[in-house]
Length: 468
Image 1 (cartoon, helix red, strand yellow):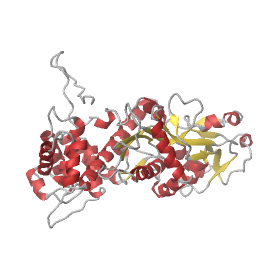
Image 2: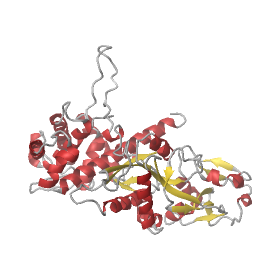
Image 3: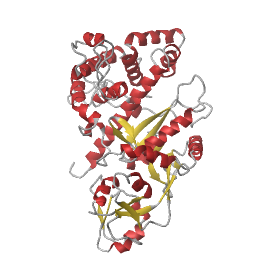
Image 4: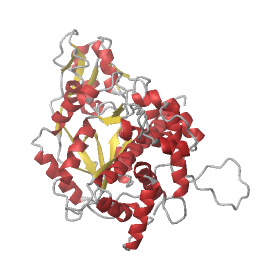
């Protein structure tokens, strides 16, 4: 059952008056997928009848999952993209492809949120911790890691950690390396990194010889092209398995994931590192969309998208998600007619929305925002859930509201629910319009969900920092 999206009204007209519903995709509204159960809630993965969506809680971080020009990257993203391909290999004909929904969260929230049913899988270079079985079940490891001291190649070589002498190690407070190397670290001077500072951020200081830290071989190799002076030394004798996690009540999902990991021949993590290296953020930051620098396309357009969205009571992240799917956030001006600009708006639609020059970027975005607000009103009503309202809005942006209304009428004539996208109007669209419309809706929704989850995670992280 969907939870209501409501305003936090500053003034109550009457104590007994129910709270107003927050419009879908309005500022500060919550993406419906973040409030509704996953498809596997109360059930397990059935290979004979697999779900259409798997929701993955993925660690937002400069190695695991981050955005570059509005597109997701990271080693976990690369591995999960391969998983998605694997799960679709034997997908029954006529079924829409299974899609992974990425929900970026802080690494420390992965297992608690998984336990609370907010995702089907947790992914984030998770070390398998003895005694954590009450929180989750872990897959077979896709990586076995060594924890080591990381220092500059110009520093004196180390055979053991206690040879550091008076040199200090700077380590993030949440680093699992503190646990792995606890005995050895007791003999040296350890200072805490700045709150929220990941080990990747420290690599720049280690490169300059300003400090040393502890990390895994895998991360050092991943960042070796960016920081070639890094060297691992005085490693722990035992390796630590790294895996994905699922809820204990999903043994069949666990078996499917183990089958996928076995099929990769032990090369899954290494391949992901190679694919990710060229995208690593230059400042080792995994920013939420609203924090991105102006050198990033999403960061460059963010102020304008936010301004236009606010004027139309829209969530700017929905505009960003559509812009990403339409043009990869690269304005494409077409003077000869047809869709144009950052948001690929038809000039005729722009005129209906009161916009004179759809080739101008800000006017182009304005036309798109006004059209989305119109679509939201069109698909409002108690018989349409927030989830389906969002799907109909996205589908209409691509195919036109007239076409979507025709699809709804056909669905009703065929005994399907015209107010439900998934498995109903979606199925009619697949047969009559084609898979491309379904892929469009899925892609925009996936970007939008990931953007909003990342922004919410960053907001909570900032609020928990000292002085906030």
